Image (cartoon, rainbow, N blue to C red):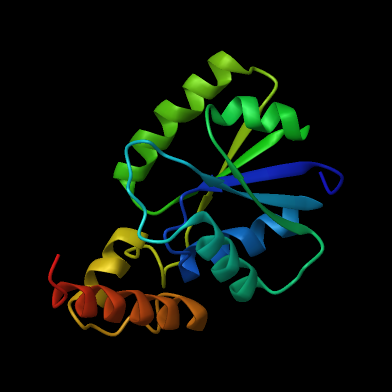
Length: 170
């Protein structure tokens, strides 16, 4: 499978150590992985696509086997356009599995040639989600063991900017 291109989709708002772990392990299975930043109409991201792309690149280095891209629309359409054969999904808990299982079956219905591979997150990261990281950071908690250093810095900057804007009259 080392010659297979895999796509690891998500909003990555922000990338966590769990995401990075899944990506590194996917690189052990596949020759190249595209980290595909999804434009999800149901989510309002804290970070822009460019900010998320920069955090991912900073966290993972400039490994030539990793590409960071963005897409809108159906994942399977993006996967086909890229010529990939595999979608990588990380699983933290049973609730993730139920959702991901349904998504994988819908994707298989839409694109039978695309396989979904599930990788379980590490024990150190199974409780971490981007949403929880943002919530803990907004409340002043320590997130340094949950996310790459660049994310800690970016979240601090974003939170300070928000706090400063609260004091500005409209």
